[in-house]
Image (cartoon, rainbow, N blue to C red; front, side):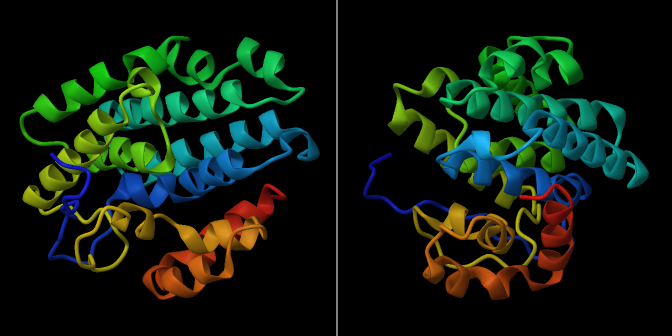
Length: 231
């Protein structure tokens, strides 16, 4: 697929947000904030706050009736994305994070960064389809996870496009609202941007202006959650 070709965006017909996506919204927002932060050391007890956010995600997912297998696989994807974010950053807490990573804590496996794509392949092969779990992996790629594809940006972009097509075929509502027209940057428009803008004042104002209306129903909950973690 050429880089100049448009990304096909999932176009769900329903209005329901997946239970996993609803539970993981604050976590995904936090990942984006952490990736964009230029000074992670300014956040006191960052490890503890991320752990609390992870616990909240798992609790909300369980309370929402998410099957244990789906929750574990979604946790795997989120742990891999968080660990990659924090271990590639230059900050004083890196060694502490490595000793008590999200992968060790929630997956009993410190190599989830290597296994992310294997786990993704398993989810994609599942019968019946597990669209709600797949969308978490999709969002993790949109949030910036690279793993073993760090040197293969085109392959990574093509994979993200393929997941968008599969989610569309499964009629899964990956976005909190209706999907917009296709475009390579469209997955970023469906990310929980309003929470990011509120918690990271360095983000350009035009991002907020572009996306606030897409997230009206979920924004208040996400913002309140992130404020609780003092971001």
